[in-house]
Amino acid sequence: MMFPRTNLKTQLNKVKFKTTSNEDILKQVQQVLNDVDVRNDEILDKVVSGNSAGHNNFIFDKLESSEIYHIDQIEQICINYRLRFLDSKYFKGKLPYEAISKIKTLEEEHDTSLKGFKIMAPSKLFKLENADDPLLFVPIGNDYYYLIHKWGNDLSPFRRLMMWPFKTFENFMFFVLLSALICTSLVPSGFFMSEDSRGTEFFLLFIFMFKWIGGIALYYGFAKGKNFNTAIWRSKYYNA
Image (cartoon, rainbow, N blue to C red; front, side, top):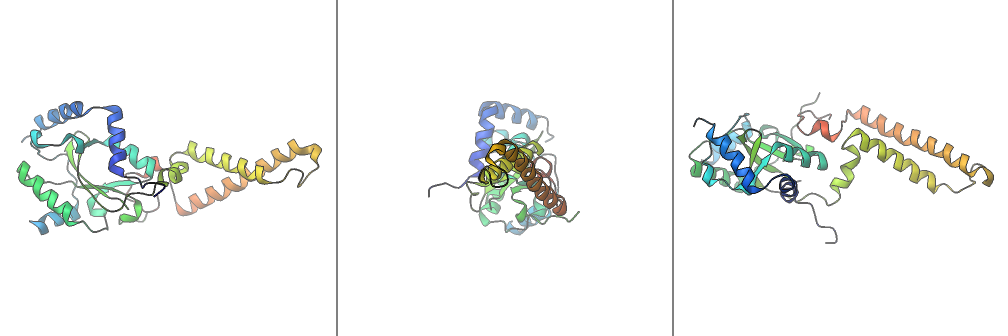
């Protein structure tokens, strides 16, 4: 395949190791666990109910640092790829057996009952309230999450690029300006005015194209109640 698909776990690891090392992560998580006072159908029911939890009681020495992620790292991936990070009760996809098996194994290894499951996935995989590549997490505490399982297909290699205009308002405006500039450049010189007025013609066409493209984009956005990636990554509402 010319363009390999995007593996979200790989992208998460890239973000994580830009800011911290495995040793630093383990030190921070150990501190969190030190501060904490310390089957199949049952597990599935817990994930489906998706009750929030501040932390779970893990045995520090049995944690894999490669599976620990901070909320800031999760947020960055969600914003880049326009994903949601929500309680598992909103997930409408089918939880694979491998995920249930890993939950059982974790609970046995750590002698605990896990709770507060979260899932990172595109909006279409959630049952969102009205006003392709899921990852199942569980909270450790202090804004750290443990990745239990990843399943499904990887994301399109172009998803980040396609979602870039919706990342922030600044990105959106730059995209509109660039689109207007490209469309203006495609109009043959002298099509509306004489060759002597080429500069004026280009400027007037650019203003028209900018208003036209921006107007359509804004109308669509407001009509559909859409918002930017930075605002929706933890939103449970459909029109976002």
